[in-house]
Image (cartoon, rainbow, N blue to C red; front, side, top):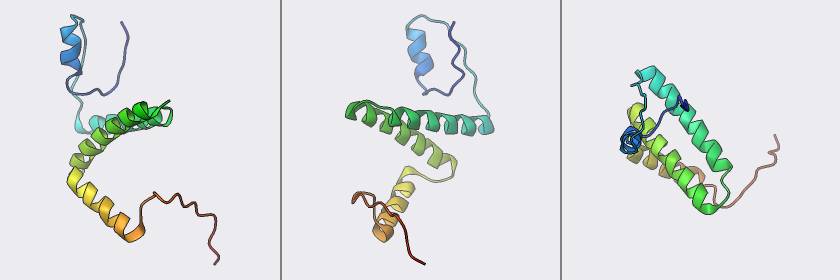
Amino acid sequence: MPVYNKLVRDRIPEIIEKTGKIYETLILDEEEYIKSLETKLQEELQEYLTSKNDQQATEELSDLLELILVLSQIHGSSIEEVEEIRKQKADERGSFKEKIFLISVED
């Protein structure tokens, strides 16, 4: 039997159950949950970085966005507040759309 030892989406046990397979899960305490979310964030980022095409990249970005949504709630915020801060930063400092690569600044 494969051992995964990783955080999964909420409906994964239900999906596994429909296949007739036996599975084992546990509910994490808050500290383990946050650590597992951080691990999952790194995993999904790596999957994005190694994606082979635009469709795969977009799918991995959606996983990253889901994790950002959950993490924002854990930190007492919301995805709307994160978006508002993002907009504020973009207004004040710009985005990354113009492809500017800073080489140096003279003192």
